[in-house]
Length: 274
Image (cartoon, rainbow, N blue to C red; front, side, top):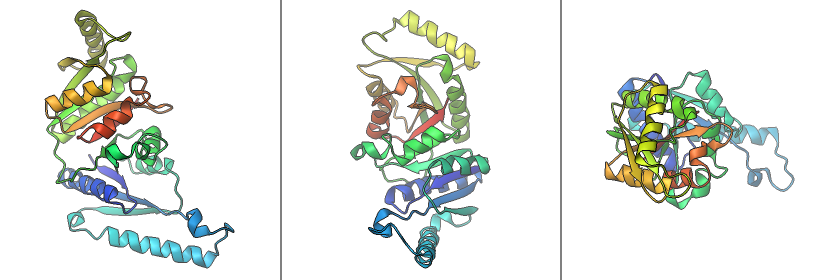
């Protein structure tokens, strides 16, 4: 891991993400790119929608100073921190910055269970997830003391399109020195598979991926409950899911499934684009 991107907006959640990113940067001797996007809100613009150039310059300087103050943290000492300011709020910019600097990871904060709209419904994080080819690590509302996951659960539908996501998850697990647990969630209804059929599907998938890892077949009422319950069962401290660039979440995690996993999981969630 050579470079990490962390967007910040001075909130408590973004600082938690910054702490995790700093911990990873220290562990892997990576460069840490801290990105802040200045935005002139309608409240600042006023009813006329006009603001003078002098006022714009003043507000930008205030934002830049606040950014500098925000980065004055003891845990950032001795790290190579590169501050980046964008003067407009376009979230595809995060993905572009990540590509420009060959980032291996984007770390972002989430409000967790109290804010569905803050994570996967038209939110900043969801926009980054949708546009980024780089894995996105979503940090939850829990207090963060370093980031050293030991048990990493990766859940998918074991369809061919998820093979690239699994390969990325395996690489990430190796980087983090975490044990990778693969799980297939078997649910009642049309998607239910017998043990033999599920095993055959999983075997075909792993052969396609050229990966030899055991897979747990876990039965539950819904996919999201299955992922969370299985993760709780093995005390997982990281959950991985595939995402689709056009749809945001892959077919397996359409609708509220991904939202529920992110918002109801105690563990951080990392997404891999397919």
